[in-house]
Length: 114
Image (cartoon, rainbow, N blue to C red; front, side):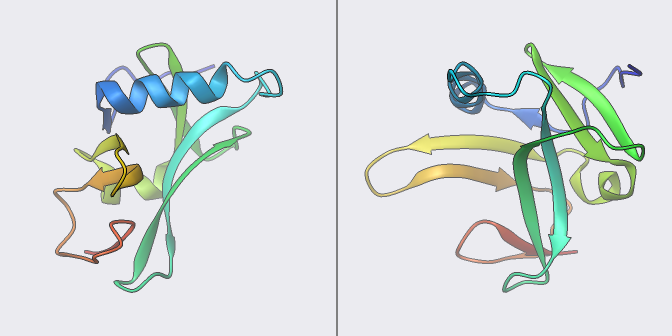
């Protein structure tokens, strides 16, 4: 497995804790990686992807605090420098994305434009 030395994205401590909690679930497939990516759609043009998935030929691999991660090489330009956070509060719950490459973001926090 080829591993990129410098991770193109960062995970906050709360995001790391939540991802590790999900990975510790009895039914978790240990062969899967955390996929961080983008896809077309959403109110601002592109939407973030954060899911567990199998590695594909076009993926770059890296590890953040013991979490095996993958990013499609074509998505890297949109994600370099991005921070993924987990918010567990009553008013706001879920993963959020702070992307310095986004020229416009949406109130939903998962859609952006470049």
